[in-house]
Length: 216
Ligand code: SAH
Image 1 (spheres, rainbow, N blue to C red):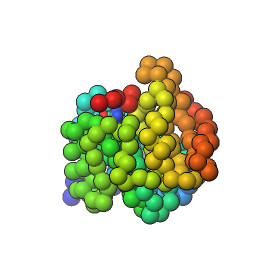
Image 2: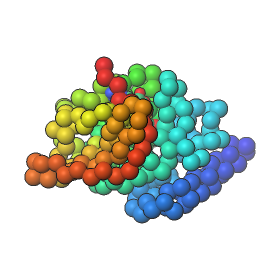
Image 3: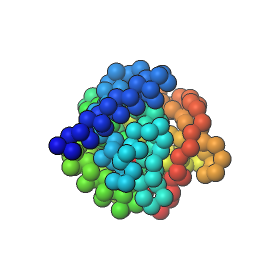
Image 4: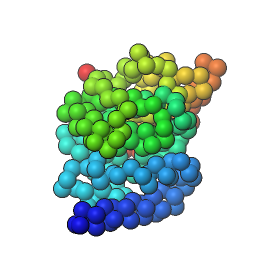
């Protein structure tokens, strides 16, 4: 069947993606590598871009937004130190791909998207692929999801110009916030913040480019 030949090609491309773009660049966490080998990234991009799903770049998903580059998804997931069964919040659902990777790590995933069209589409994709426990909400992620707090990890996939205090407040003790911070045009830096005895420890990781975090 044509479909299964195509699926085999996607499988091979996905294994190559993980080996060349992710392992070779230093991502080591076996669980993250396995999740990246499992989630069918081509299902999260528009049909006309499926053939490019496993290339080393972000891709447009409509409404001027992008699905992040595979390496960025993998490394942010590794940085977040996801534990099985813990609650994880993602800001910027976009295609739903990062949420699916987090779900593969057996986290309880909550994700917020400000654009309702993208949120609804991501929700449908996640459900179709069996990631039906992922909770998708339409809203301003700057404010977090206070009803479900605290979270063991929070990943932000759009860049604000400062760290939102509500997200810091919604981290559990020992929890990790991975977030790109910077100006909309200039360079953004990926940061990791960890809550230790109520105080925040902060590390600057490396420069990144994300779409800006919008406010309602
Ligand atoms: N994580 C996504 C890619 C995110 S692109 C994926 O795996 O595909 C960033 C997303 O953040 C966009 O969809 C954008 O609409 C959304 N966004 C921007 N500002 C936001 C806000 N304040 N709250 C929630 N989502 C926001």
